Length: 73
Image (cartoon, rainbow, N blue to C red):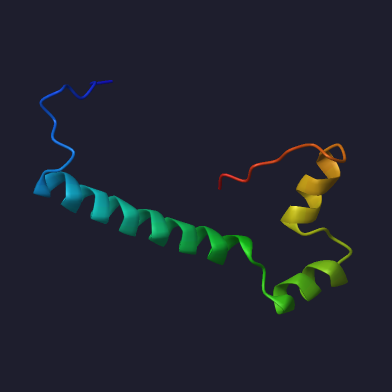
C-alpha cells in the first residue's frame, strides 16, 4: 500500500474534489445497503407465511444475546 508523503496537500483543490466525490459514493452505498437490508412488509409476510425466517432473524438466532454484530453487506 502506498503511503502518502508530506508532499500531498490536504488543502488542494484536487483533494477537496476527491473528498466530495468519495462522500457522494459513501452516501450512495449507504442508501443501497438500506434498500437491500429493508424487507418490505409484503415480502416479510410471504416469508413468515412459509414458516421461514427473514435473513435478520437467522443472524439473530446465530448470535449469543448481547453479542456485538456489525452488518457489512
